[in-house]
Length: 384
Image 1 (cartoon, rainbow, N blue to C red):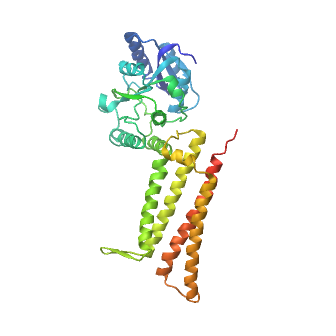
Image 2 (cartoon, rainbow, N blue to C red):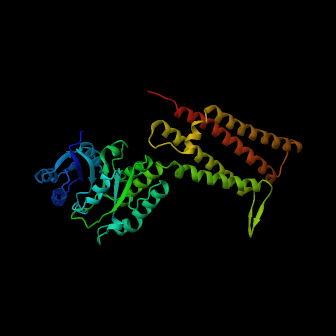
């Protein structure tokens, strides 16, 4: 849709008859006093309390979004907006629609996404549940900053402004509350210009329960962050497990060790070997996700690992896996020969397990690398 306004103030709405009118009036007052050429759009998500009629009576334009969900409403509203810039905010009268100038100024400066920060602007007593204020929001925002190179302090602020064209290019798809995280994560991964301005939060004016569900929506946010960061989900834990298991296995190959009153022997070696196999699997999963991403583009693939992975062919992976497998077979033959020297009779478990465990590791990891290389090759097949 072509741009007809500089700004669209977008409000997602599901049964907000109690507070919708005052939100629209505040937004209209801001447009009138600031001189910004703008419109007010209510993205209605199937309200049954007359919210649509209230919006129209107050002079807002209603965009009907049949697909349920916070994200779905905002995506539908964004698609139907006529402004170059969009400032989105909940229709529960918790956000300050009278003071949107800092958002507009940053957008005019060329920022693609301007986030509000409620912790810097001020949170009215009772406006945010303690669970969200002191645990949920800080923890999820910290994880997001750890996973992605963005210094946003309030990842889940519902009052934010953005350049409509820039955000549409991101292809946002989540329909639930995790939409808030998806916007920031994908904007960060695609190197959009992001700024943050203080904003306030006051207790909403609704009598019904909020749409946000603390634990289920918190999990959806966390799941989204993990699924879009294969390094933190798979690669880093896998490398740590593999290296720790490798170090312990290598040490125990030469005999048991004593650490204080704790003795580590062949049984510990079995668990170390298991850690190596789990670590190898996690690293392979990371490579699978990176390969899938390079084909589908669901996350940008620009790291050194991605460039290295692009040069690893199926054939090379198969050769590496085959070498590991043959090394395991060779060690197994050594163990078989030692067994033969005893006339294939009884053997010391301590001695033989220090040989057969590494042999098993080479064989299993080698087979995983061989078939994993084929799978990566399949993921890279171009198809219409």
